[in-house]
Length: 177
Image (cartoon, rainbow, N blue to C red; front, side, top):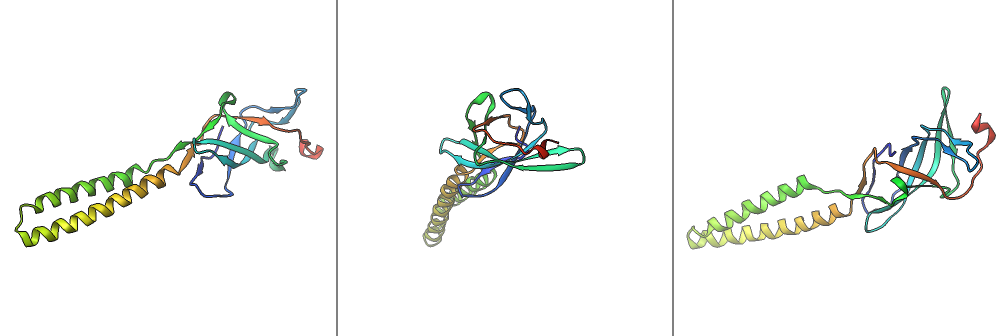
């Protein structure tokens, strides 16, 4: 399960996120490799335009008594996928609050533009030209807001995931004690 939300804003980043094992990670012969409640530290490896997320574990944090032990994992040895092995899909975040404010402003200036038609000619031209310019600016910002919000992808904390061992690796004996 994702312990922390995963987000991507379209920029390369080195942020780390956490996955908590609900069940122990077992070897092929059934031995416990990592116990349940182990926290895997994961990084976003890639994200497709369709929102398919590829997470890889970089470390494991195991509680042993009063101490917390950290095990650095080999590159891409453990991958995180969606539940039942399905692709892990991030949703597009929407900036609805800002968009609503932009839309209200657009309507208000549209109404002012229409009302200006009732004024005498010298004032009418100034008000209509001003509101037309403001509406154009609001439209540009609205378009920019849409572009920005479609680039943000999010996986909520609590998302059910599955952990897959992609290649074998060794765990030091002292780590298992």
